[in-house]
Image (cartoon, rainbow, N blue to C red; front, side, top):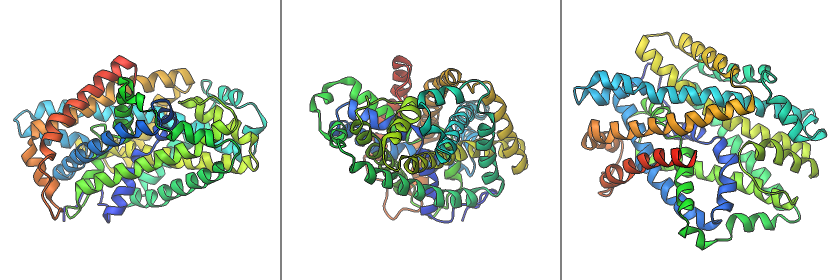
Length: 439
């Protein structure tokens, strides 16, 4: 059994839960419910499921497989791919692009999860529900107005990673991800009994078949699927490097895609029926999570309790994603600079915090996240797809993907990977620039 210096996941369940923890994030909560209803209801699920299956099966599998094959994370994996083409120096340079994408997302994400923790505490002491949510949100998202909670997010993430690598990440996700699903299921059941919730279900699930003739429906479904799975050319590679060679990578990839989609559906079922029950205009983005939802809880019986449940579950989703971003950076610095793990973790935390302090204000962090998610991350994902399937070569990566499987890859896998997935990754990057973001 291949043994990484940071340890290995103990089994496929731990690996899948860690990957689901990375994939399930704010996009599932504040973007998917609105897009589902706005772009055709149940009709939107058709292109979305098609893209989720494709990107999950061949996209995630590529990142998991190259991580396990190279035995290391982002920087080492790109060197490994490009070394086969005698262009090792180019691989050393290219690997930094997706890695900086992971660090860049971590900078903005830590700021936003700091807002979530502040809202969680405000729900516990009832401050959020006693004041106007938009005013509360404006106050905490002003520059340097949420620093203690921002620091707390970094500290929690660093502490998890200082306690261990693969095993500790697995343990954290085995606790936090089931709790996330349970809490959102509780919310979904509660809002189902609200008068007027039926309109929310109509918004979500009554199919508007004409939407399938709208190009934007397919574009948004593709973007939602691509970014929801955390395909960045970085984060999932490091988790793949912690995977035992006895595990079936394509199977684990589909399981990750499935549970990520379930999380998105739970979010939709917990949010949109409540939005319509109280006659609030549906929206997406931070305003949905930090303004609309608190205003809903204010009007609900036991709203304070459900506000705590909601922001606690969002905190779990955010921190598990942040753990993956930190780990991608930490492992690469260990590999590249031969750092001690503790040094790499602490350095990552300090850089993330210091950079984050400059973008704490809402508009600044929004602009920062737009730059990272529209330009850096999708470009990194393209580099990953090309490096694995074209530079390293399909036949070599197929050997890795078939290790741990009882059956060979299906025949359609190669054309789907090389001639469908890779071009679509390029298209996602181009459309993101054209639309100003599709994920």
